[in-house]
Amino acid sequence: MIRRLCSLLALVLVVTACTATTDGSTTTTTSAVPNTTVPGETTTSTEAAAPTSTIPNGPLPGTEGLTAEVRDDLVRLVAVTEEIRGLQFLQMPTITVVSSDELESRVRSQIEEDAADFPADAALYKLLGLLGGDVDLETLLTDLYGEQVAGYYDGETRELVVPIRTEGFSVVQEATLVHELTHALTDQHFEFHTAFNAMLDEDRLDQASAYQALIEGDASLAELQFLGTLSQAELGEFIAEALGIDTGALDAAPQFLQDSLIFPYDSGLAFTQELYDINGGWADVNAAYTTMPGLPGSTEQVITPSDFERDLPVVLPSETIAVPGYELERTSVWGELGFRIMIDQILGEGTAVDAADGWGGDYYSQWFDGTNAAVLIVYEGDTNRDTEELRRALVDYAAAVFEQDYVAVQLVAGQLVFIAADEEAVGQLILSAISS
Image 1 (cartoon, rainbow, N blue to C red):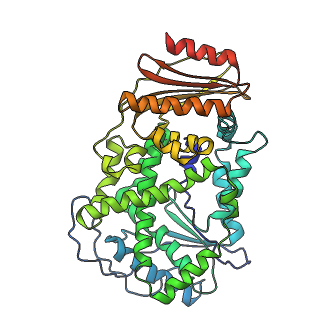
Image 2 (image 1 turned 30 degrees about the vertical axis):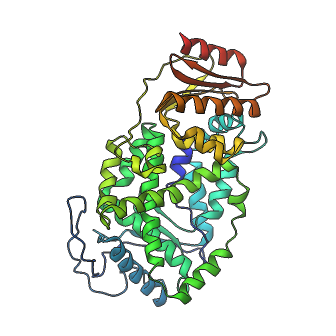
């Protein structure tokens, strides 16, 4: 729904925190990859095949500060990731091993870098009834990510950040590392981080959410295939450890945040699995890294994988509306996902799915004056019936949420218009401008 959620999703949520020592040390290593065997999959033009590594098998150079058990685990997991994913590392990503406190600090620092965006986004969420009036969005997200991230791939530095360990990894932690190593591997081959950042910089936010689902779905599918290699005993360990994980912070978050955070992993996995199954391999997943940015992609195509490359979004020309005293924060696409998570929290999942299904295209504009928010969404469904279904849902949504604030749900020249504003005069101004 907003730039901040798309950007934060680049930090991978995982199911557990790795056990760390308390010495606060940091170890950074960069190395080539030991020889590995790649499955006999046919290489296509979408698979950037790497030359066979000439580095001998053994500990990764520069990891001497870790125990032999941890070094051996890392070497093994690199090889396992390459074998599962059918690609070889062009070069080993930087591995930075930090204390658990430093890991949390790094995550918090990344969130705080863009703290200037939080007031406008919080005001919008509160206006829409998605966030309580006394909730601090920055604190909520910082605490949530600080608790949930147990390691992540940083696309800016191509750095894999993991907690330091003095003993081998648990099964859950190994699965997490395969997930993160998959990110590092596919970024080397398909440069997804560059494409994803371009989407964010250009406020192509629904497309960024769709691309994030491909990225996370890919790594989740590799992780799932890794679990398929485990013995029954190891799977038992995995399940027992996973069931013991504290998800209190995520469970306590507002529903729209939960839906936003889960989407790239849940729907992304289903989407990627669908691509994988087309020809029984990774080739179509690889191709999507360049296909999706050029479509344009949309969350609709992830939610309904059969729509990928077929049901392309209608591009609606946006109106430039000046609101005195307010700054235009952004104009972007709300998307099928945006309507789903917005309506879900207020009216429930069933209503949200029915209302958002049939999404054809939209644009939205968001304004902020330092205290008050305003938003305009202009929507077209695939059919008039789809537009009417969303209109009825938004009327019910408005009745449930808005008491003193301004809200309008109208059809204007065949398009559905939704306007919400903290100040009635601002809402009336936007409606007058769009109606004319």
